[in-house]
Amino acid sequence: MSTALRRSSAAPPAPVSGRAAPRPVRARGAYKGLLFTLPFLAGFLATYVIPIGYAVYQSLYQKKSSGLGFGASRTVFTGFANFADTFSDTSFWSSIVRVILLGAIQIPLMLGISLLMALLLDSVAARAVRFFRSALLIPYVIPTVVSTLIWLFLYSPTGSPIHDVLGRVGADFDFFGGVTTYLALGNVLTWQGIGFNMILISAALQSLPREMYEAAHLDGAGEWRIAWSVKVPNITGILVLTGMFSVIARLQLFGEPLILRQVAPESINTDFTPMLAIYYKAFQTGEYQYAAAQSLILALVTGVLAFAYFRFTNRGAK
Image 1 (cartoon, rainbow, N blue to C red):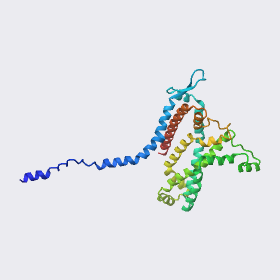
Image 2 (image 1 turned 45 degrees about the horizontal axis):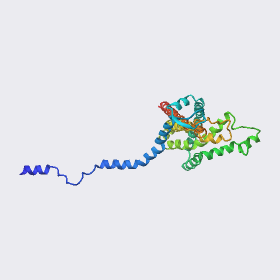
Image 3 (image 1 turned 90 degrees about the vertical axis):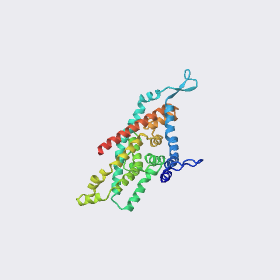
Image 4 (image 1 turned 135 degrees about the horizontal axis):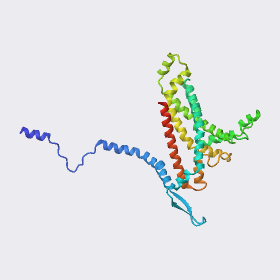
């Protein structure tokens, strides 16, 4: 009798017929998490995966004219012919070298000014920091077209206050003649990027523990010594990050030279930057397939250079 009672109490309850077993809580949570990520996945597919896939598809075709070139053109599959033509296109590779050389001078100058401003803001009162942060961020907030048009007016020889001041001292300066074109464009890019990079560097400085500064003061270090030996070595991560962003932005340079080209077509040609070359190939000459191949190669070059910069600067930081 007692043995039967023990067996009956130890036996699991029989499932009720007609009712399904409840789903695990973990599975329901996974489904809910997937639903939350669906908007991101849809946007990622629509703005990244599908356009890149379509560019790869376009790059494998070319437009051919039938007969002696007087017939209707047709799109035919040519494999990697567009990529082979791009690798032998000296003007396209010259545009990449041009923006790399421009960035090699302009990026360190811009980041150096941003670092200096961030260090100066880190040593003033909190109210002043908030004011100067907002003021210096204004050039970054202004749209690219508007900011370039502002500097285009300042560079113009008619009605420009800069030329008026230069004329009073008997100087004549052409902002769009040869090498000065790079100075004019670099000045616009530096003016636009100083505020944004300064905000990032300043935020990194604010996150540093103040005990390090107090210990350095007790050791007799001055403000500049603390800035160079304590602050800068502890924010190398954000300096590398801002530098990598700047390298990518220079290889994608498009809006500023496109606007400045309206007044200086001799100095800024259609192959001045790789993005400008791709734009004119696609929308001026109608070579969409060739432009798609160039855009993919530019993306690959940008990724390789950004990775190389990141590895080199991180190795130097270590």
